[in-house]
Image (tube, rainbow, N blue to C red; front, top):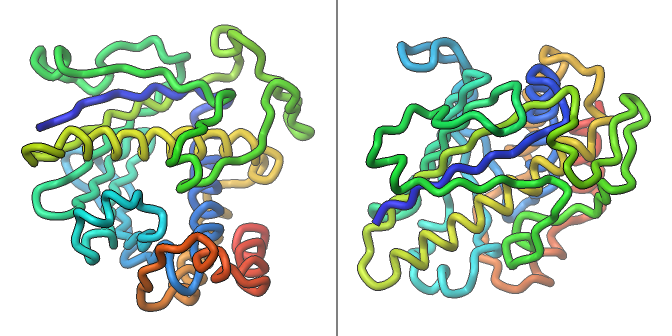
Length: 283
């Protein structure tokens, strides 16, 4: 089975601001979710150039997040399969991410960022067959997720109906804000999931889609919620922080431990680790 779904996420910022916000958000969220047992390990981070994307940044990462997988998935999947490798080609404003899981299960995310409010059609250049099977969902960053995956990826406490940025004056975001926002841009994320398993392939697809959706919601809520932390920073400054952050991540994480108890997982976050997280993004 193949699932094709396009998520459109409208953001109250310019394309260039989003580039900074996204880099800052990824770095900070990785630092927050990494400890000596689980989290993110950066294997490779280097420039690339090809005929499809042009010039950009290639990264390869390992995600050891076994304790956050639903119990039915940990039962089905081999233990090593829950250590996921992600490859990413970031040639902003176009990006591609590939996540092979186990056997023939895979997730691919193609992202195109445009300076609009989510009304552009077929930005990914899909053919008639792909368009017929594609589902489209608009994500409103003012609406947090409340399902299982919101626990797994985190769920910030921003209330954008009252939120106002001190540095930019943006906010609050009230009903219909996407139509009147300036500046504005949209992340068009095309998620393709291949789960060729009879009997439970559909369940896997829906679980992975729900996980990706929760991550999109939380990460983009953080992009705006942390605006006063990243606003005014440059791409060059963030590149330096990213290098420091990669080193911190790899220092903090060790061989993976299979944690199935939430209290055991939370106990791994020591006060010292939390200090490093803050220093990693605010140096």
